[in-house]
Length: 116
Length: 111
Image 1 (cartoon, rainbow over the protein chains, first blue to last red):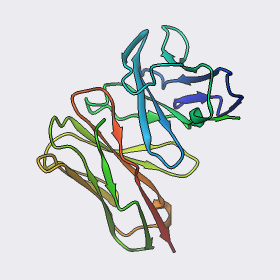
Image 2 (image 1 turned 135 degrees about the vertical axis):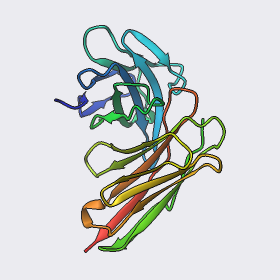
Image 3 (image 1 turned 180 degrees about the vertical axis):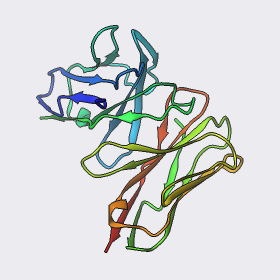
Image 4 (image 1 turned 180 degrees about the horizontal axis):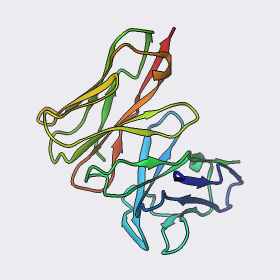
């Protein structure tokens, strides 16, 4: 049973380019969370999605960032017109139930974005 | 944004020592508290999910307690081993959807 798969593991972009990060949840998991870890910081919640729906995007910057979890295929975190401050590790996690309903999160190994 | 505080920030113990860390969280609107273990170059793995005041959970040499009324949880490691070296994260959730993580306690166990 494969774990949460994230790709790419490392991504380098120049300022102004777009970054797309993909996350395939564990089989049978319908809840997907994206977290960002800035240097010297902890994991910060960005967005929570279920299939085809964004449930909570309160942690996501209002501009340039978007996320989706289509009916078919992986969840995608998209960052448009990247800036140096977007350089961070982006972690995806999935769970079979809501995190509050004793649903522990299963994390991927992260995608490390570097903006030159 | 919910403030989850963990202490100490880092800890260095000798093999065989027992140790404990603290996680403090807002005591209002409690829903669940999670503990995760994060080894270098790997992804965080869940240790415990705790929901009830007074909960005590145990997995091998690691155990955790929860006090929701005063807003803290303790994680204990008995007889630390070098393979216990990792960052230990706690995360709190209220009535919303987001698990809010602390910055973690970094544990180093030397032989």
